[in-house]
Image (cartoon, rainbow, N blue to C red; front, side, top):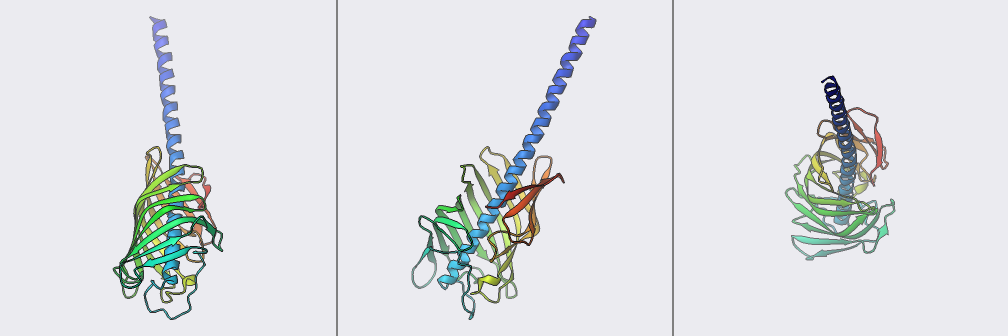
Length: 279
């Protein structure tokens, strides 16, 4: 009887230990998934801002920005070798096709290939107007971007602003890994609003939420804690923080302090941060 009891205790201890190991392993897996999806979210946000840069420059190039700008047009030459066509020649809605062809690199070092199609209901800066963007075999620095982005102009007399909705978003990394994303952002122009044809002084503040899902079906929800900043003269988001909610933990993406670089960090529940590249 004593032997049976000892055997029972030994088996029980083994099972408890095994269960504990499984729980620990599961928690580590969830942390790693959150790290991965946080980086994916950061890259998705950054590529969407890049699409905004392309849209604004194309609108200036084809006189579709609107407003009463009388200054000389100044851009970052984001379009580089892109061919832009707009139809019809008069009236709205208009369809604008931005074609980077088999690829070219802009002066700020960003390589793009493929096409972007934008349907505009009116001039980009007119309150109430919409711009709907889709992608055709479109790549930025090797990342394939898919989905639908809709800009709705929510400006008032005093403030230039937009609501941006991403639907069916998909990013495929150069190595073949992919993730899905969707959500709504609110964008306020904090500098450069009075000079619509000069993009070099434009700065945007971005808030809102997003959801990101990896190829295995794991999902995380991201909420901007402190507004993201995107300068037209910087190819990447340079400031702001995002909270990414995990099952029993959360991660914080930190885009930096305003320095123009392609580096951001992720930390989970205050643990040491990891660095990742935005593109």
